[in-house]
Length: 227
Image 1 (cartoon, helix red, strand yellow):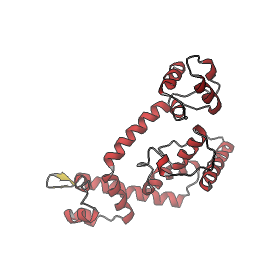
Image 2 (cartoon, rainbow, N blue to C red):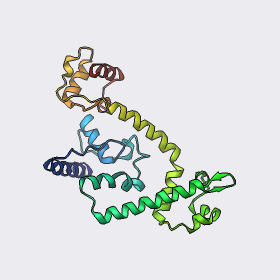
Image 3 (cartoon, rainbow, N blue to C red):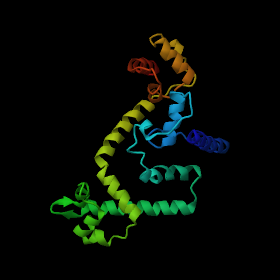
Image 4 (tube, rainbow, N blue to C red):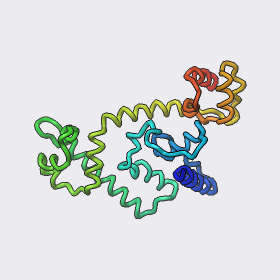
């Protein structure tokens, strides 16, 4: 339960500071971080014991890798004032390394294929690319950036499919539910759905769909009323 307390404390502190400054609250979605998965589960599913954060709870865990945590969250941290100038400069330099590496392996060809395509092969890693191209061998790239490029290339097909799932989820998330919406005034909704929606107060259709016991038919009815 320590992660539950720590995560909620961090987000509460961030949003308290943002509110004092008059800024919009920070609300992460489930494709951005495990903290978002934890909070969304607590809100939509509830718990009867301390919450344990397992990777299996996240449907987008290919996007929530430890190797890309800084790439997912440093920009958000900078926007809300949690990332200082020195750290931001290091992050920007790291991003430039990755961009330069991708530009090179996409335009450099070997036996009719780009080096990016070669790197997709299970048996090919960055050292082998350096043997195939002197430009790659001479590229001043940190080990961390090499690893990041390699991971992104090898997982790209799976990640693309998961990003498509995220886009579908975001379409549902764009259907907002007014704070004052009276779920009990929708006669076609099942009693169970009316009660759970009224108690949990989901902010959008995507969140409503993650509530335990809610059916696709409930979401169709709710969407029709919101439109």
